[in-house]
Length: 218
Image (cartoon, rainbow, N blue to C red):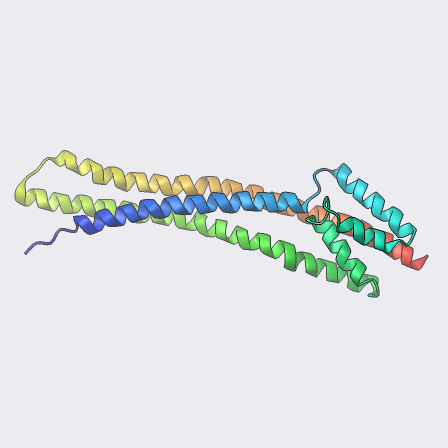
């Protein structure tokens, strides 16, 4: 008694298409979310960062630390990385300068960079998984094609019917690569933005800590 694998292979093919579609959608979602998160954490322009730091400088020179806290906790700044770190610094002013720098660096890595890297890990997983799903679809398509060849030898049939299985086999590979390649490029762009965020946060928090240390010494 002969059993046909066609129903199982057809169902598997549909499942692969669905998996590729969901993978692509989640990858796009992660990219959009990361871009928005990075944009929220950074100042829009260097002038905006300088304006903020100038205001902080003026308040610290007056030793009006409450004004610094209120500024960092105001709507334009409460989602940005540097004001968040300044709030941490103001809450730990009794610590030595070296300890304070270490605390801010650890806070930035743990609360901001770790979340971004977590999202990036999902993009990397999708980049690796999409081509493998495409390859699995190729294998299933070829199995289905050979299964039809075997049936044709017994019962006869039109060889052109194999075109569907071969087309599916090739299309799923192309679909997997079509998902992975744009996400590789998007991931590279996001890595650049994360690096720029790190540089700007280190620069601006360093300026703030220098201002704070000078105020404490005076």
